[in-house]
Amino acid sequence: MAQSAEHVLDHVELFRGPEYQQMLANKKKMFENPRDPAEVERIREWAKTPEYREKNFAREALTVNPAKACQPLGAVFASVGFEATLPFVHGSQGCVAYYRSHLSRHFKEPSSCVSSSMTEDAAVFGGLNNMIDGLANSYNMYKPKMIAVSTTCMAEVIGDDLNAFIKTSKEKGSVPADFDVPFAHTPAFVGSHVTGYDNALKGILEHFWDGKAGTAAKLERAPNKKINLIGGFDGYTVGNIREIKRIFELMGIQYTILADNSDVFDTPTDGEFRMYDGGTTLEDAAKAVHAKATISMQQWCTEKTLPFIADHGQEVVAFNYPVGVSATDEFLMALSRISGKDIPEELTRERGRLVDAMADSSAHIHGKKFAIYGDPDLCYGLAAFLLELGAEPIHVLSTNGNKAWEEKMQALFGSSPFGQNCHAYPGRDLWHMRSLLFTEPVDFLIGNTYGKYLERDTGTPLIRIGFPIFDRHHHHRSPVWGYQGGMNVLVKILDKIFDEIDKKTNIAGKTDYSFDIIR
Image (cartoon, rainbow, N blue to C red):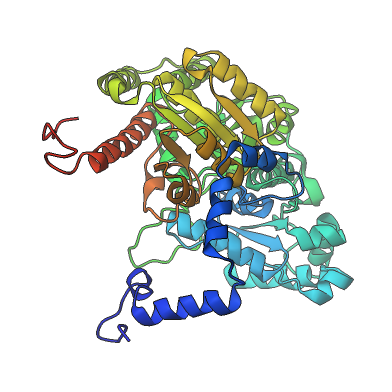
């Protein structure tokens, strides 16, 4: 055995050992119902054809590897953005373990969240007792300032009433009567993490602004000069929110970031454990009703929240993940108009640097073909930037995109000469993307970690942008919004382009005739 206490091997090396190779071969032969290798290869090749693509796109009752997660993940992500807030998911422990691990593996940070530990008896008789005990335990053990409740499939299927359950729990003494327990129904069998984020954020604002569940008094409308900003579900929340704060401060704008989890997912190692770190204060969340306007950086993350805010008398403005020059221009001009503040020279110079960098590298990006998958706003923002770079986002696929998103994407394509052969695919999954990559190949693929299997299968190089990114570290600390973020995305794309050139020109005298070290 190659593994020992003195010589510990990583699993990547360990499973290449002869004993493990034999074990895996035996497992395949005895337990995996193997088929003739020639037949397997025939079907594999057929699955790359236009004929198979037609059948693949005709399927209705099956989803294969969707590029989305479920609602409660988004609810947890939104909830931790508030001061000392503990997300409480009314459902099973296994579900919550998934949300915590998904966030921890992406951000490389602990992710605090509890469940009501519903099991078979709760599925039959309801989860009221689980709620009563769970809120009491959470309040007494973890000392939060707020507990934000959401649901999983089990609680939604049996129809548990969160409003009634929380009221009963308070009557039973689980938490004080005036303790903040906002809630949102987030059934995991519909929508996605984007929907869950929207539902949870709206639930929290309803709690503070309308006194929902009798926990807060209604607030009188008294507009001030502040601007609220909502980042949406974003794998780059650490870098992006900090970049947006920098922009606000450069412009001298008073602001409130709603659901600010930028510090929660980037805590320091300094000898102190921070179960809660940073976040929008509960006082600021309540006072945000008085703001002059609310800006959402992701339209499809706030489809319910923005109308709710607009009903409270605020101007609302939504963007689609502003990456690059034009999108950042629009964002800054909206900020300037709403706030009455001028755009500072420092940001103007940053814009010029990004334009200069794009011009320096245009020869390498111009005409390159890309496929993109991910959340609706991310896909839109990246596609818009690629068009700006003179590239062609041929396939843009969003499993949680809808018809309205498709129409907006196609309008974007129609606005550029580089978009004429580009198409948007709402509601499709990564098995659909596989067919697209085989039948209409592109130069590069942009998406999250799960695209590495498409990269291996189709040979299309993957540029990792999105959520989750499990197999690379610390990308979330760098912004992708704004001019500086556009520069980061540009460099990431160029690095992959140059890596691929180097792979194909690395044999002197055979593939590298000019011994080229300059790109």
